[in-house]
Image (cartoon, rainbow, N blue to C red; front, side):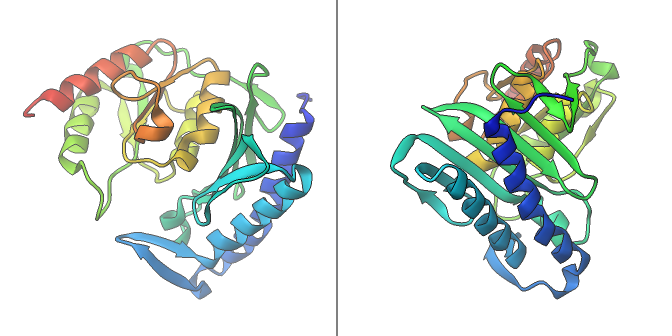
Length: 268
């Protein structure tokens, strides 16, 4: 059995507790109270309940830590060096349409660097977790990124921009380029799980723009600890600020990034 630190145990316990109500709500998705948060972007009672649970459990364990949360925003604690970065329900649109592909994403940032991450997919009870220097795991099994090196044998993932978001044309250029060079592209609607799947070798790479810090915080740790590389699409390393991310195994990160950058220039 993989050794889990006290920190990881706290994060896993919080995710498991928050998931119980999520699963009950998912079973009765047609009865959820839903309010509009923005164009094609919804928030349900499930989001807020899960976030409250996560905050309660984590505050009890680490009372001075700060928070950055999708629904509640930033909460400055006495300890500003440590910040929990939380997405209580990544894949909200899937959830609200009864699609069983969503996750809780929980990361810990220390002094500006991602230290630990947990992505929990409760429908299939898949707990992805990683801590800096300790490797990445799926439940009790160590995971690593894939070993594929040929683009035409590789499977990639991305997220499709929706109504009210920018860069639709840029996305289409990126998609066309990767489609033409690869074995396929998947768009399943949860960036946190896309990154976890890269870490587990299910996808060979992932790219997206327009993300928020809570979409990618935990996944960044997972991919790095699984032996992969994570940057912005342009190669810089300010993913959490820019919302641009490119994650892939060590063989494909460079060629995938080059392909995307060249595609973005076409017709610009």
